[in-house]
Length: 330
Image (tube, rainbow, N blue to C red):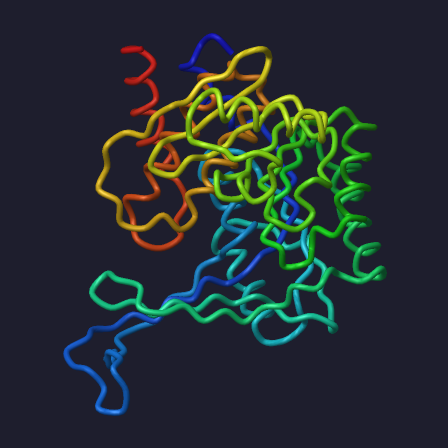
């Protein structure tokens, strides 16, 4: 799209199917004034707790915050944590129709202990084995029902290696997307990294890419281009986006490649920045945005959420104010 002023409004017409691992991000917040006499650790005086939707559910929050409609598909456990997660959806304006409950699994909960704005400890309760055949069939049924009944503009795979995105799910949903001519974007993790064949956009971070590539990778254009060529050779994807943490973002596709540097910011917490970046990228792909404009918007969005503590969705009005100013001065 050449008219950047219309992008914010165009986002509101999009439906996004989000497939992946969801979780509860739990924060126990307090203050530290002394060290424990029992061990050399701080004693946290508990003040309050807060539960937020995390993982693929945080991607759904970002998609909604950007004005689009998210359709979340996943498998969670059937205990009290899953009930709590389902109860968090309606206040956030999210539907649970695509969520499968399984008595064979637990719901992921990441508990962070925070004092004076600093994370002291994280405790993860999770399950990482792949979902079983029965669970996979139930999830695929939910995906197909949504595809049959909604005009889905892009499918987003959000992988945290908690088992929802098994090889069968990945393969079957990509084939369904290809059959229906729906673009696909992927935020991968280490397992099944090379399973996402023929997707539209593939977005690892630099650490993930280094762990998988056959060559050493430096955060420099020529080196990253070689990594993108390996990805395209093995996956057949159209675009490769590699996030580079404080060094910005690399994007390759349509015979163009570039690095976008980050803007100077006061960083409070990098948690959830990748969720925000892939959310913006997915909407950009769905709209057929210019590649550099899409990367710029995603880069600005990822930087914005790093300024706030905890896992939080993007602020659309602030984001587009920054984006319009950037594009006018470019």
